[in-house]
Amino acid sequence: MKWFFLFLFFLIGLYYFVPSPPPPSPPEQPETNRYMLKEPKATAGIVALIGQSAQEAKKLFGAPDRIDPSAYGYDWWVYSRRPESYVQIGILRGRVVTALVGGEKVNVEPFAVGQRLQTIFQTMPVLSNIEIKLGNGTYRFELSEQDYSSRPVVKVGSVYAQLYVDRFTGEVAAIRLMDAETFVKLRPYELVYRGSLPAAAPLSEEKRQAVDAANAKQIFDWTNLIRRRHGLSSLMWDDKAAAAAEKHSRDMHDHRFFSHESPQYGDLSKRLGALHIPFQLAGENIAAHQVDGVEATIGWLNSQNHRKIMLNEEFTRLGVGVYADYYTQNFFTPL
Image (cartoon, rainbow, N blue to C red):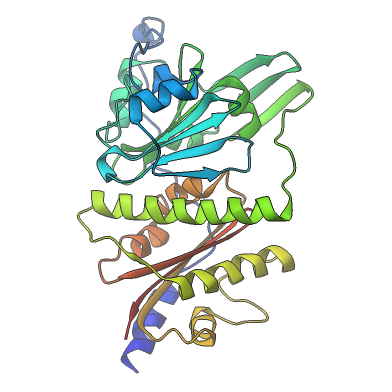
């Protein structure tokens, strides 16, 4: 019965994927400094790589460890071998259009993973609204107060840097770099536009499955990346738990609910038991309607109960399942 009470303890802590209460607003810049702050520049590193050819990316980073498809037309070149140098580079039609940086040793000047949010607000202009003009329209993004303090944007030349902040430490946890068209395609904030809205081509069933599998791998990568930063051991991938997680994501999508309790298949304990996964401790995180798996992972990091599960030192295995824009993590420790 010990495992049952341990599982019950964790299940009580699970709830729908809603943000934690917002942290205090970022410190206001002194009125005299607001007009003195200049847009930062980047002459080297990965920021300067946006817009360049794929060959330039290969010169800088070498051949990728794997290539993952995305739902937005570009392919991710994933460099995951060394956690401190982890980066994903998005390639579309032979050019670099976006990047996701998680490694502390990746050159992302004028930014850095681990940088304090307060430093950013004191040294460079942070945008509260963003207007982008493309050939087929004008697009205006409005950041909410929560966006401004947890996902601020800084423009560096023609590149938009979205800074994902760990709201519990006040440090940059990840950096997403985008050209203007990719920014509009991802639509990460409230949007008002005039003209036509750029969008990726619809995915075939085969391509969607490949994108789902890629998102699951990336969630696994980023979860272990984040655990490493907090001095925790990496989790092992578990195929059966991944199958349970994928089934739950698909169940939520197909039957239009969002819960740890499936009307048809029950709670996590029942769903793991159905696949003959014995455990002494188990926990689950779910998310929906995120830009991609990486954003879902940062969202879990910034939600207190989800964060406790992701950073629990007692878990040893993880299975991740994605279906469209529904994401499930199943953590457990075997009997």
